[in-house]
Image (cartoon, rainbow, N blue to C red; front, side):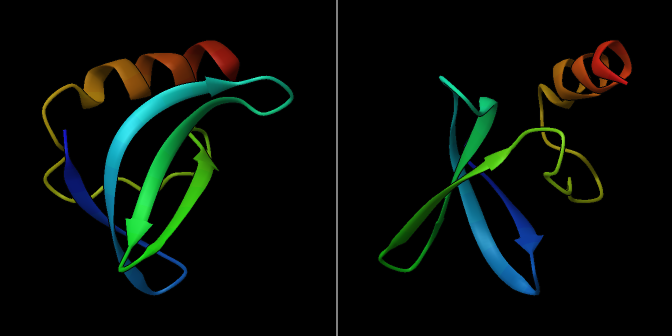
Amino acid sequence: MPFETTVLGLQVTVTAIDFLVGSGIVAICRHGKHKQAIGILDLPLPDPPPAGAEWIHAFRRWAG
């Protein structure tokens, strides 16, 4: 971390992974001066995936 990915057509930087009550595990994404939490299950990963992506894949399998 950090790593770059695309969300809704915008290049964003994932700066952290966090837990938010009511939202669960989220990726904290930045685009310019804007910051948004996106559910880790909804986060598109870049190709090739960043280091540590195996944990996101494991959580997706577990939650699936």
